[in-house]
Length: 181
Image (cartoon, rainbow, N blue to C red; front, side, top):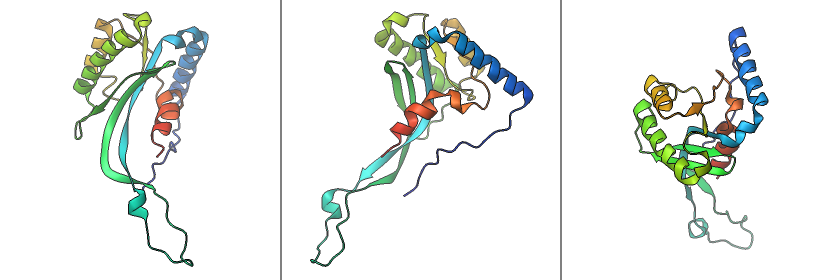
């Protein structure tokens, strides 16, 4: 069975990157009341699990045979990309990206359009311009057309320091729980 490693490779930050991280983190701490308005999102691959049924694991045995195997979960060859957004109350929007589709700026713009609709329906107190978007610095998230979309729709975005996965709640709160069999 394949195992997904959750270790992050340490990155040696430049002095400028450290200063930016310190500045952004200080701003976040000074404005702690805004966290009720933050909707954070990210993408991850999800594998489909194939549970081995009890019938599949049944064996003929004698009295001296070793113990029976229990049903277990095994990886399938099917994996799909999940894009998920949540806030302190729970999941606001999620969708699975079609197999083979890349999350590029066009795809991400479509996801953001549907996210806005989900925020309008599920978090009416934050609609239209009281919610704050937090996502990492992936190329699709920081593309010019995405920045223009956010500006046009008055969506405030929290800066995310370079190489700071510890400031991405999806990577440490949601996705590890999701990937447990």
